[in-house]
Image 1 (tube, helix red, strand yellow):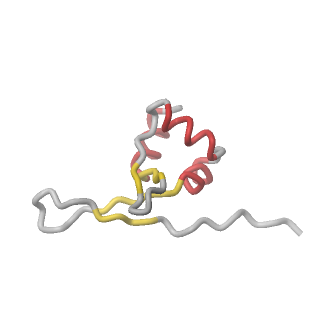
Image 2: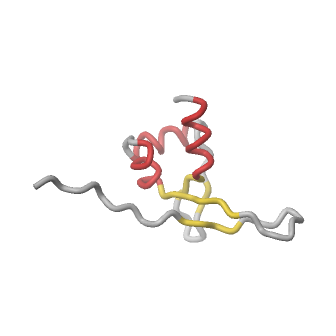
Length: 80
């Protein structure tokens, strides 16, 4: 019996400060392990990309490193 892939936590939505629009914008943010799973690499690869400035991280209110989904899309479109 084949094992199924690990189940990721739901993507987190974080409210960003309003920029004067009537609606506050939101961005989906992933944990380092969720970001790694999403693009098929190891968590250490994501941390290395952050350290080299290839990904711009955010922080959760608890201080956890988060990767905005837009950053992953930008990385994939630009190519590693």
